[in-house]
Image 1 (cartoon, rainbow, N blue to C red):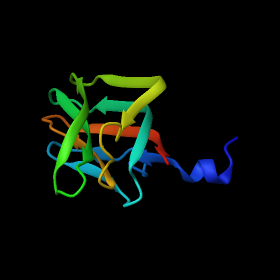
Image 2: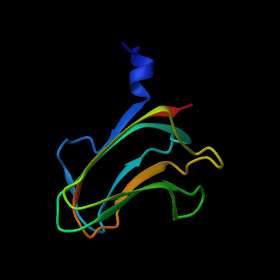
Image 3: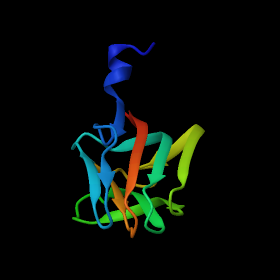
Image 4: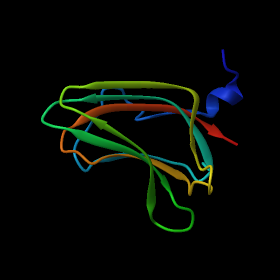
Length: 120
């Protein structure tokens, strides 16, 4: 069982389960304190209607631009579940500029959930 301090560093995007992300839509976790993060697991359910390309992006510090760090491709009606043993790093080369974004390049809608930990 995590302590309160450890629990406060955990995150999941989006916070509401079963939230659909259509083509061209994104969810964003914005907090100026986020400099580094570790992705622990990813769940993507393609809702049909074609393929989807979901990317995990990090905001570049000092500019209004996002860099794609990881991408996941799914086919129509496919479920993708990945649990990382060591995790995927965000902010490892440069600090994150306070925001992590999940972006669906579509064309199919997806249900998505990404869990991780904010690293001090």
